[in-house]
Image (cartoon, rainbow, N blue to C red; front, side, top):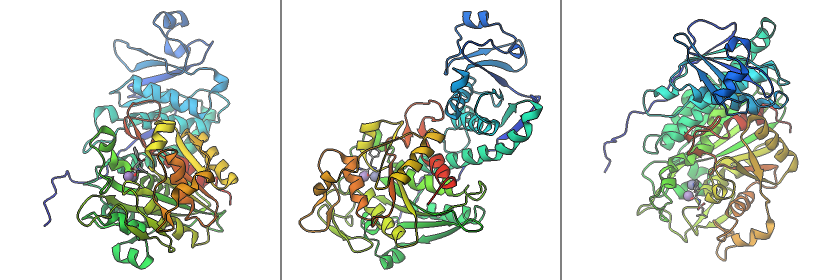
Length: 493
Ligand code: BES
Ligand code: ZN
Ligand code: MN
């Protein structure tokens, strides 16, 4: 029997952010002046260093002082730290502190500082800092804390051309990150695997992507036993969404991206307890969402690499038809897996896609998944775990992570723990022992990459934030989206 869905209607919010460059326009609500350590507030701010200090302001990053006149826009002093240390991460943070210091002000201006960071990168960092700090996913209309309709970047005449040329890049990076936040934030009942497939089909053509959605029958034909097995307990059909981006001309390399798309992770028959963490298991498709979001902007950003995305989508539900603990499934490529725990479902759906990725010409495979609670325990909510079998590819991932401030930390792909995955009945068990869960999960995935250069990004900790800080907001973060974009744009085979 089917039931009427009690959910709100599904729609992705649309938001317009108008970015201008050059002189300060009329109609601005608040203007930021960035003050660096040991320097005076700019004359335009109308306040002396002494008075600012007496009001508790200093130039440390994170400090802000809002000056309220009888009328007119707010003037905000924003700490910039040492001018020499103002890289894109610092500049992004500084602008995010400004955006948070004036909640409810909808039209912001930032006087762009001169630092060793290029004008273009300063512009991108400012757009990211303001827009990502402001954005909160919500069903329906954006709340007042999320509003940002205009951002004026104030700079000298001489910098206008370079600044203008960078605006589109900043807006695309923000657009993709917001989409990833929206997708991961949408409850599992509203955003099903089928629905995500429809969204991909809808967005594909404009983004220059070939989109194919594989349903249950096709997955049977492909032998994707991992995805089919995890889907057994669900009344919602599974979907594998394949996205292909082909640059004009000879690609600089071929990159495959594999994303975990568990629309909701109840744990299957190994049902999760009803605590806070598990109430956010709608975000268990954050990896797949980050890939879709990233791939929608590759064309507009002029990506020269060929990128193929595999999004492995289903929910993981308990029911009379669900996969049992102890069942054995046959994965794509023929390996058998003994299912010790149905809550270790991510690696099952990912295994099929990793095999598919190795079957086409590919220079590197990067997968991204909210895979293990152990990654959250080990590195917290700010840093993702990375593991891989190829140093050059790992270095590219680390460099991208650094540039976009989506920090990663490498854990060892320690083969000494591989025996924990040995099964007496099948080729593999789907979980290792009680410890080093992030490592044993990665060792499981490694079994499916056929020795191809591969890096695994575990975003179980970073997909969600419980505090609003810097570019992150409370809720889904979109972590990984800008990292993957940067990786694709700079990819070297
Ligand atoms: N989606 C979870 C991982 C997760 C846990 C993400 C907490 C964010 C917060 C994953 O499917 C899972 O349940 N993993 C298990 C694996 C275990 C059963 C081997 C885990 O980490 O406990
Ligand atoms: Zn999961
Ligand atoms: Mn699980």
